[in-house]
Length: 289
Length: 338
Image 1 (spheres, rainbow over the protein chains, first blue to last red):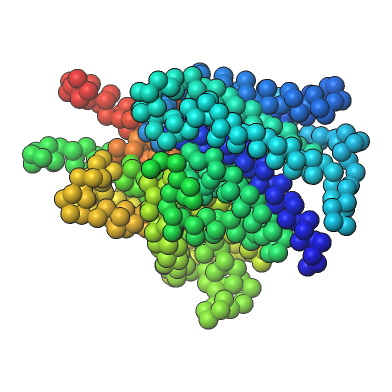
Image 2: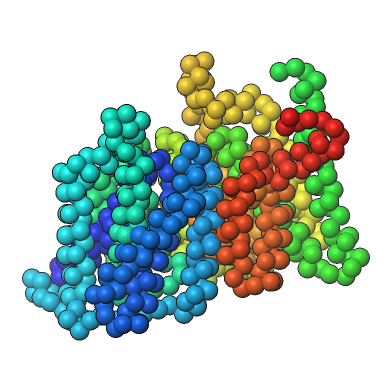
């Protein structure tokens, strides 16, 4: 195990962490505000990836794919929220799990019906397909681009949530919905916007993962489960917790797979989660008091 | 609670339970009569998943704890049987013991191992509640899943084929019919056991703490230990179901312990009805048969199936058990939901 390999894997880990943050941001805030477990978040990621791949196949433009994917995912998310999921906010968690579980099955199969069984491949634009030198290590330009894009989006999101009025409403809703509502925050409206934004971020993560992984049905669930782990470790409803936990999970998962066997490495984050929860059952940065 | 009401409700549990067991017991005869042994295979699958769903419902329906790691325990049971049989077939000792294809040894081993793992997992997961519990158990399920994939020696991704003949003591249970009745006996025991637990003080504390935890604590009872006990019992019974699956189909693979299989088990329980002990058994039967019928119609059966699940959650709140009881009550002129 050389230093350069470790550095490369660390970068990969941070890159996975950034993607996980894009996924968990929506998940954790939706959960924090509505106390709703949205298992379809992984499907939105998949929808984003497929929308991106289809756009690129039709137009040949990767940039356009990057723009279309979040929009399609947001539209799908809002459609799902307004027609179905909205009815389940007051229901117990068992019903929420079932309705989202059923939706996942239906969405996965619908995608399979439209795009078939063979995974789609996304090609990299020439500008991003090479390597760049980072401290003497050749690192794929595209992965670096993901890392930077992810960091920028994550940073912007962090600023919006932590420093703006809208972000204040969101945080208020996440930490205490009835009080926020009583203080004049239009929680349903804020929430709908948030759901759409969360879906868009999931779609963006999906299309960015497209060229690295293959775009296929069922790609959403592994990342959903990682995002749930991030949400739980970070503390539900906490954007700061999601950021820290996403980077932690990304790095541990990536290094685990390299240092141990891939399967054993995949177990590492769950062991880590168990260890953290054994001491802090509410996660690292709980949003609810 | 008045005494006659208790008797009546007990009767409401006993009659359907006996009906379910009798109907299942008759299926091999039907299979023989029409000469279609495939029916026995399906019925065995129904029975095995019924065991798991009834076991899961003990924590979901009565404890209010939606566990999504039960497929993991199911798989652990299956892998214990599979791995012991592998060592028996290859005549290679497993640490201090030799392998075995005898369920009289491998079932207790599955029970012991799953109980130990469930105690650890439960102790950690039950520090949280509600949605947190759900997400944590989901993560644990994935841990088991990847754990099974990591078992390279035992097939890894491809799963583990059982090459030796499975016995129960001196009895050869590789016969399809004999195995079916073995599984059915386990289902009967499971229904009896869970029914007794639900009616006991243990079950009462469990139900009470899912309805109002604060009151239970105020009365001076710590629900944590009761929940942990229920979780372990439920996990162990699920592991037994998994052990039977592995023994019956001579095969176990990580697919049998994926997180979607955990979701399937929850769907079975809810489809049947979480309010009664025997509900999930009907749910498992409906699920297995529905899966079979839909997949014979179209390769895209999961689409229909997913929509059906959504529809069931939206409309059929009490599950099939409640539907049956309502129909029965209406027929006998008893206004149950009046």
